[in-house]
Length: 186
Image (cartoon, rainbow, N blue to C red; front, top):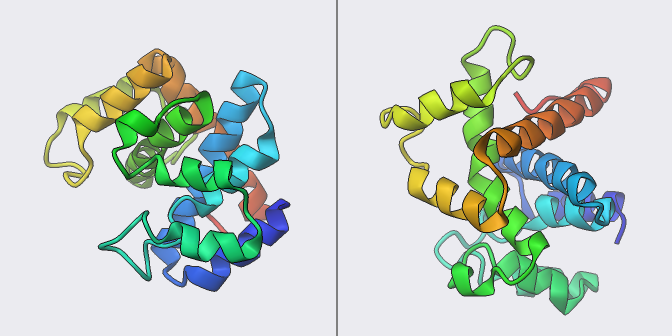
């Protein structure tokens, strides 16, 4: 499946602008990590795009309903298992780098976007120090589990500052691409 096919599949099942933007942010972070690890950029990006494909229609069953939406599109079992790995007994399912990366960037991408929305320079110049400070502020983006952010980052084996830098770089690249299309993550 190429990116355009993945994007069309996402649009078929995600109508919420917020969830759509989240999917684009996770795509950006996954692409950045694919480049970091020398992996398949399109595969990793598509996983980021489609990881929450079932969330809007089946929020209580997410991600268990993802196979129902992905299998008819011809998505292979490894891809489906990677989607499932970010929600079903995920620690046991995080068996490889792509699955670990998905878990590590999912909520962190949203957290970084929330920080960027409060800054006059948005993503430009956003450093790990600012992200760490916001992580200590329990009133900020309180739905995001800080312990989970740390656990998944540690599981991926990347230091905090490098993790933030990789994600921010990916988000900046995605923002530039989207701006050229007349859209935005922010």
